[in-house]
Length: 302
Image (cartoon, rainbow, N blue to C red; front, top):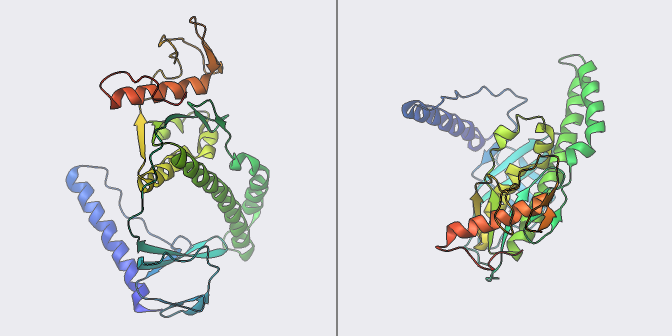
């Protein structure tokens, strides 16, 4: 093995203990560094490499054939190359300094997004966007894979084979979820200048009875991807406190209490709408009111 790759574990160990001592000095929860076995240590990083004829050359490894996802950006300075194992496959990731991107043109549109379970997202425009529900769709296959793994003898070759099959299924679920998040985030960033999302306590919600469905939707990863894409395109993603947004009428501002099972909003003023769309409109109005000195008139897309 090349000494260039063996320096990376030392850097990781140094960062882990530096973070531990920093948390101890600040009075935070320590979080001691965790031992990584050979099954959990699944990546190596190089600072020296070469690309030739579609292959990547790594010191101590040699030239490896790569199925390129896309060409490397022209003019970008590559810092490190990380080879990581995901189940049965190996992936190469490049950390690079990209040149400054050109912001997208201003469209003058803002939107509020209400995240849900039955519908992934409801927009203040009246759109309801479905989610992939990848975990629910692959639950029968996962159930069979877990039972097969539990019957295998610990440390046996058949157990490792069953574990790889289970890891492949989970990777498939994760890829579906990430693909949906990236495509939806790209569409929203192109259409709207300012995006208001719920400031949700996802960890707290994940301890409820709907924990599996909440994890299946992947709200946290979607918001992170949306925030990164918005920053790159010169857009803004602003988190808004969602308190009473589903109970308040977006037309007159009156509180209309209703249980969680009631999915349709009806107000005494005569306004009716889907519960999630009404909440998205309230998020948009509330976000706009906090950005301006007066209540906005017609600024939200409703």
